[in-house]
Amino acid sequence: MPGTPGESGRVLHAQLHLLDRQLIDQADGHLAGKVDDVELDLDADPPVVAALITGRERITARRIVGIDTAVTVSVEDLDLDYYDDWVENHVIAKIPGARHAAE
Amino acid sequence: MKKVLGVTLGILTAIGGFVDIGDLVTNALVGARFGMHMAWVVVVGVIGICLYAEMCGRVVAMSGRPVFDLVRERLGPRTGLLTLVASFLVTLLTLIAEIGGVALALELASGVHYLLWMPLAAFAVWLVIWRVKFSRLEQVFGLLGLLLVVFAVALFKLGPDWGQLLHQATRPHPIGHEDWATYAYYGIALFGAAMTPYEVFFFSSGGVEEKWTRKDLVTARSNVFVGFPLGGLLSLAIMGCAAVLFLPAGIKVETLGQVALPVAVALGKLGLAIVLIGVFAATFGAALETALSCGYTIAQYRGWQWGKFVRPREASRFHVVIIVCLVLAMLTLLTAVDPVQVTEYSVVFAAVALPLTYLPILIVANDPDYVGQEKNGPVRNAVGLVYLALLTVASLAAIPLMIITKGGQ
Image (tube, rainbow over all chains, first blue to last red; front, side):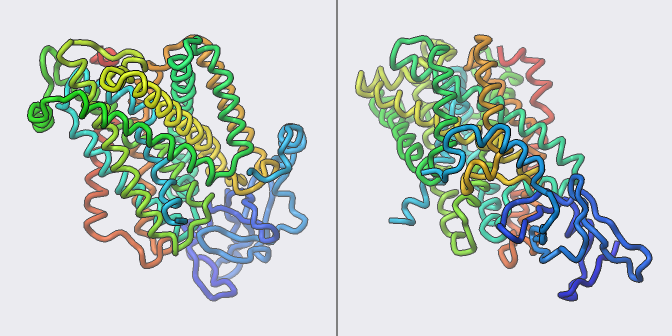
């Protein structure tokens, strides 16, 4: 399936270059899940990528900052860290030393 | 100096991955039963792990992506999940064996039963992962693990008939009343021990932890080509010691104490002390590697934040996986299963999981998106394919041979 010529003008193969890729949060460089699915806008000609799906969140195409060996996205108000935060608050943060870098 | 320290990653991976509880037990066991007639498997294993670890190192240095990241990307979610389940279970089984090994080493040194040491060992592993920086962890256990060189010293001191050992090594067939099925079964175990999947998970994730870039390509390669062959030589020394001492006497190796015995015979109390520290360091280092690898595989498959390069709370799910795995390891060992037997099974199951682990590495090492100009050449690809075929045969034959030989009885 042909992909979209993004702002860089690069033609991407949606399945090969997007599906199952690592997501990176542009703000802090943290790993933010995988691209579980790709939503295509089939009304456009040629069809373009409308959004990336990860877990229960939908990342619209305009939030995609860069596509390399990982996909960098502008997370802003999306809650990609929901489960990680839950585990952090209920388990990990209660163990002494969780806030400090290793020595 | 920094370069010299950089190589310790390779040495740790080699000592921990090559000479961990799996290799200590399997090499001694094979040496006692088959002499050096199976030494060639170690050589084949070393070449294989060098080949594939080098590809991993290159992919990490050029793209910053570790192995399991790629497993899902290249195999898709379904086959990726199968690979995850298989590799994770094998790594967990290995972790159980390593923790048992640490506790057994402490029992040998203190006389206190290993089951009493075991919770302490598991807690210490967790504490080190929780608090100690990645680079320090690898330097300390890498260097201490080098004490296992004492097996080579012991082999010389035992004054073997070198001609006879060489004679055995050049004749790859079963001896005495052993049959071909048992020979093949232990060959696969030895191969599995040499190419254990967690080695590449740990090596490539370690490259990310160390923030390798294109400039570190030389470090990555020297790690592979110094570390793994060194591990292979240690393996052969362990096998040689058992071949010299146990084979003529017809003694089977069933305990970790027997693995260390040749060193005590050759070098006395001092030798015994050194070998016990070496075994402790190698198994503890490997326990760290396997515990981390349990976290690496799941987190990388799911895309979670992982690693020791961020604070624990920033990679909370990664740390929870490690804690859960250590608790599972502890509970399993508390059922009083024999850690040496767990080890024997872990290396065979490792062989089963091998092809799925190594296939994506071979694919990605040819993808310019990941490695740019540093693609595999035709020779590397040809050898890589030969190994993939070999791994597949070993993987398919492992379980049937386990059944036929009743686990190598």
